[in-house]
Length: 278
Image (cartoon, rainbow, N blue to C red):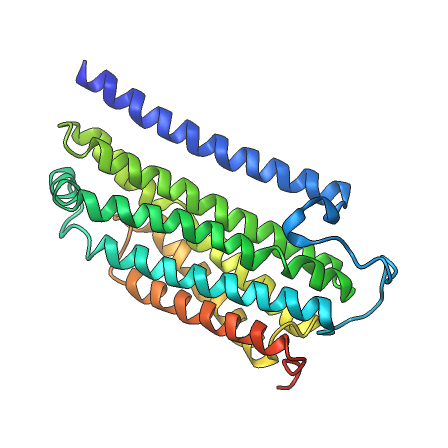
């Protein structure tokens, strides 16, 4: 009977996570295919005074775009702050990856872990405020393809975050239920959700936006390209590794936080019209 409950819990978590990712991804493709950016309220409607096929090739921080860039920078800063809270509340994690140690850690730190997932959920909502204003800014600059890429990778990043949060919350819920198989399955799932791959894709699109649209400093484009390569390698190691998260995870987290802060600073600087300088 316990094994049946474990299987049901694990399968339900996986199915719910898959459903969330499928719905969000499908909505993104429909949104992109219809090409109706103005339907997304947070992104804002195109300026009717400008032709839709505006052929500018770089971001021009006029009054409208400057406000959007400041909004994106503010959303990025709030995201980073809440993400740091999430990581601090998670603590150092269990000392080993066996189900008994993982379950004991989750039981002992139940309150802090649930608080960390609330912080992560709020952080992902703040990431929408970071993401959405960038799309019309790049679109108005004539970088439609990059605008679509930024939107798509950003949505996938958010979806992966919610899938990971779902698995981690479920892990806390079953930690005291004496179901070691469920604990092991959920621990593996939350550690192997490809968040780092989504981060690599997001970094790559920011690099393109820096090189072609001059959204941020050009040198930050090179930094973003290197970050994308590093995060991509991190994904490979997470797939072939024996444990969900290795000892190098902390360095990847620190690199991601620093990179996001640099992008946020670059967007704020772009709002003043001076980000094009190298």
